[in-house]
Amino acid sequence: MTTEKLEQAEEWFKLHDIPTIVDDGSIYVQTQDGFELQLSTAEIEYRAELYSNLQPEEIEIIEIERINKENQIL
Image (tube, rainbow, N blue to C red; front, side, top):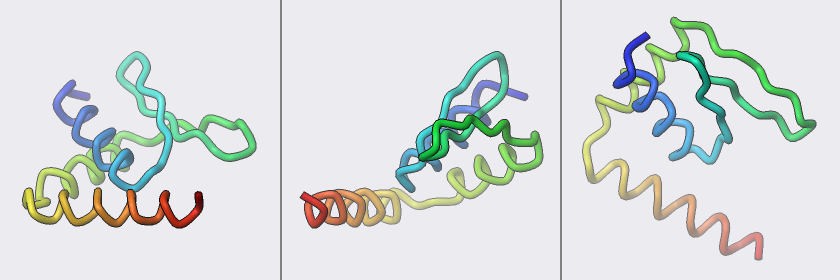
């Protein structure tokens, strides 16, 4: 797994407010119950591809929506 794909996949999860841990070439998704689930290589590649296909405007919209959601909770 390339560093670039790991970083892109991690960015996709960050945009969607999904906590992750990157360790030793793997990504783990953290659940609300404290579990860490290791993602398959195919899943990491899929999320990296989704992220790489996003346009800058789409990333900005997702970030704004996430911030608005956080502000509604407060």
